[in-house]
Structure formats: C-alpha cells, structure tokens
Length: 610
Ligand code: ADP
Ligand code: MG
Image (spheres, helix red, strand yellow):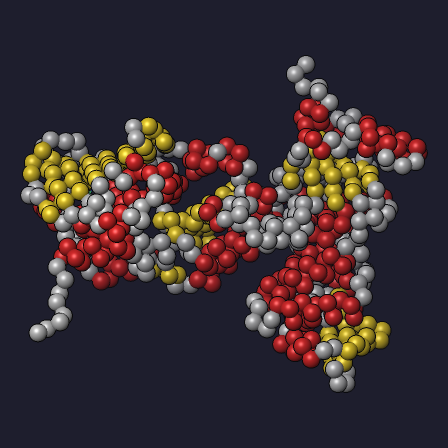
C-alpha cells in the first residue's frame, strides 16, 4: 500500500499557519498588512484578552466582492502577484496568499466586505477550515475581519500562548512597527474596550515616536537623511547615552516593511563604535527605500528577513549616513544628579591653598557674568582651525599636513561649548568652562583620548598612520605565540605606522613608530598590542582589532589625570574638542564632558520659583 498521500488543503493551511501564525500578534500583523495593501487610510484594531478571545480589524480599503470572498481562504490565493516575474519586484506587504488561509484553519474567522461600486456587502465565515457560503449583508465600504478563539481546536498550540498582558505587548509591538512606517495612516488600537493608541493621519514620524515611546526619547533624536546610489535613507538617532541593554529599540524599515537585517544592524553598531558602552544597543529608527528589484523578501514566511543584492553597499551607506550625523553633532551628556552638588562650600574648602581657592572663586563668578552676545561671537572665531597643527602633541612633521578636512564650525549647529579665557583646571584632572546656558566639566584624559582616537581613525580611513623612523631600532624578545600573532597581523602594524622586522630568533625590532604616540614606549606598546592579538585569537575580525589597538594607543598617548596643563595646552585641547565634535564618550565608553545648565544651578541654589 502506498505510504505517501497528498495532504488536504486544511492540513496544508495548518502547516502554513505553524510558520506564519505564531500568536495573536501575528494575526494582527497579517491583517494590518492586508488593509494597507487594500489602500486603507483608516484602520481600527480591537482586541479582547490579548487577542486570545477576539481580534477585530476594520478598514476603509478597497474591499472584496463576492467572488473574491469565495476564494479568500484558499491556500495560495492572492490578488497581488500573478506570474513568477512579479516576485522580483514585490511592492505590496503581502504576496504569498497564505495568511487568511492559515488564520482560517486555526480560529473562527468572519469577513465582511464591500467594494466602493457595490450597493451591498458580502460576508463569509470559516471555523477552523469549515467554510460557509458567501452571503450578502449590509456594511460600509471596506473590510471588517474578526478572528475569535485562536487555536481553540489545537490545545498543543494554545498551551504556548502567554497571559493576555504578554500577548498584548506583542500586539502593541506589531502595531508600533506599522504605525512608525505608515505615518499617513489613521490608526486606533483598543484593548478590552479601552483605547491604547489613537494615532491621527498626517503626524510626522517624530510625533509618532513621541506618542509611542515618550517625549524624552523623541525630543533628543538627531535627524538625518541621504539619497544616494539608488538608496534613500532617513534616520532618527538617539544620542549614545540613550543606548539600551537590548536591541529592541533598533527599528529598521525597508520600503515601509519592518525588517531585521544583520548587515544593517552591524552598520548601526559600527556607527556608534566608541560612543556607547560595550554591550549597549543604540536607539535608532532607520527608514530605507530602494527599488524592490534590488532585494528579495521571499526568504522568510513572515518576511522579516530580506536578501539584498548588494549588502556591502547597504552597509556602507547606512554606516556613512549615521556616522556623519553623529560626527557633526554635539553628543555631550547633560548634567545629571542634582545631589552631586558639584560646587558646595565643602568642595571649595578642600581645594587647597587659599590662593587657589581665590582663583577658583574668581573664575566661578566670571563664568556667569559675561553677556551672551559676546560669547556668541567667539563661538565662530575658530572656524579656520580645522587643521591638524592644532592637535596637541602633534609633532610638526609631514603628519600634520596629511590631515583630511575636519568639519568646520559653520556646519555644527549644535555647538554649545564656548571658548574664552574663563576656564580652569581643577585638581589637575578636570577643566571647567562656561557654556551657552551654564558650564561644562571636561575630563581632560577622556577628552584627549577621544580626540586622539578620532584623529587616528581619520588617518586610517585615508591610509596609514603617519610614522617616524626611530633613531635606532628597538629590539625585544617575543614568545612563539606573540611571533605568530605578529606574522598573521603584519598588515595591522603597517596600518598603524609601525614597522617591525625579525631580528634573530624570537626577536623583533621596531623600525618606525607613529608620531602621535611619541609619549608611549614603542617596545611596551608593541608587546601589549601583540598580547592583545594573542588573547583575541587568530580569527578575530581585523577591523575590530584595529580599533582595539587604537583605543589602547589613544589611552597611552593622552594626557593623564593629575597632569597639570598650561593655559595653551588647555586652549588647544578645548579647540580640538570642537574640531572633533564627537567628544561625548571616550573609547571606553566613559563620558568626556558633563554639562550643567543655569537652570540646574538655580534649582540647587533654590533660586527658582521666586
Ligand atoms: P496576500 O496578502 O499574501 O495576498 P492573504 O491571505 O493575506 O494573502 O490575503 C489574500 C487576499 O485577500 C489578498 O491578496 C487580497 O486580495 C484579499 N484581502 C485580504 N484582506 C483584505 C482587505 N482587508 N481588503 C481587501 N482585500 C483583502
Ligand atoms: Mg496578506
């Protein structure tokens, strides 16, 4: 007897449902997408008990006539594609024709629909594959779909459903994705008769973010866009300090479809490299548009994954647009805990000698007496200082002229920090200076480290780090592991401007060393770098290694905490802060600058409310 039998349609649908319909939220997603494909401008979603009991979606789209309704629950029944060529350029949210067939096989479904031309509507029911006739009925133009008691005949699947509250969280997430990518839609979400979200059409994406995620996130977003090489990107980026412990707040949309893509996510991570603490995920809303012919969405049943024809191009475009924006923005961390009381009387009295105390008090009073207009003029007085000779510790060698252009002040709309002689080094570690609306505290080591790191990154993008030949080669002994690491990562050292040559058995000699690192001991540095390579193992991503070694280099070459700086040196450092512009976090993720506003001070001194 033959063992193989062709499964009946309902079995096929139930198997498809296993892939497409995981939980009530998947139903909401599929139905919302259908309403969008039907051209609806207004959609209401009503849910009871997290969708376990009821999901109702009402749209004002193009509707279906009786012939369409008769086919709507058939597997692979779709109005969106006809021939195989259509698959190469999908412009609709759906195309597989399996959502309604799947949903109909696992729940009690009723559909009522009316097209604009028809004088009446039609309705059809499907109870887990048991379909009714199509019958006329009254109703508005558009479609209403009700899905009740999902999985009620499938206890094994029902068992996996979570509490209504948890299921509702999933529904809200899908609703949110649609709401962000379709700001033109009028959307409502109700749960157990209560309104969860009411989103009017014509809101901007930022308005929607504010409603869905809160004011504080929305108001701090940086906005940027680019239209290049067949790809349009619009991004709303949270500042690095807002990064989260999970990647949940990384919203990627491709032609209005929410996607997860490791190339794009990697580009996002790269763009924030060194700005966020390790293991944190920056908050981004990224809207990409490109011709549907340039990627394939038919790789995953829920279409959450896509396959790009040119993933490298996507990666570099996303990285560039985000990084450029971050680079040009002031990412300073606003002053935080009022309990910090940075300038309490006790603090002042511990500052040491009376003379010093006086200096501090003088400077403090000067901070707040300068009229704003005078400061404003000064704000632009360094606009020509975009060249390398202004960097601290840069030897006057060829290196300085190799510098690529830096952003100028005219481009930096967010520039807050102002220069004047009104700054002060505190405990040989911090620099205080006046800003437009208060003052900032700069961590001299962290800031310098960040400047050097950025500088080195720039040089690396152009080629190798400028180096100088050592008067005498510095030789040193290495272990076998260090030697292996050196052999496999020779290029890395070349990039860094470090020429190393074998110098007898288990001995290497350093011939050239980066000019920027003149404070560091070459042997110590190279040994440490080799140890890092040994530790990381041979198969580590070389790009990452470069940056780790850069972190190390920047840390070594930067001024230390506890090092007294001359006025000129401080001047230089603060100038470079603005040139680099991206100084909010040092490579290790610590902030470089903390700002305090007048408002906060006034609050501390209880001056508000009078
Ligand atoms: P797909 O969306 O992949 O085509 P579905 O099973 O989700 O498959 O839907 C099947 C068909 O039913 C769609 O192609 C569309 O023609 C029709 N349809 C579904 N929902 C609606 C709706 N809300 N308004 C109008 N037509 C709809
Ligand atoms: Mg569909």
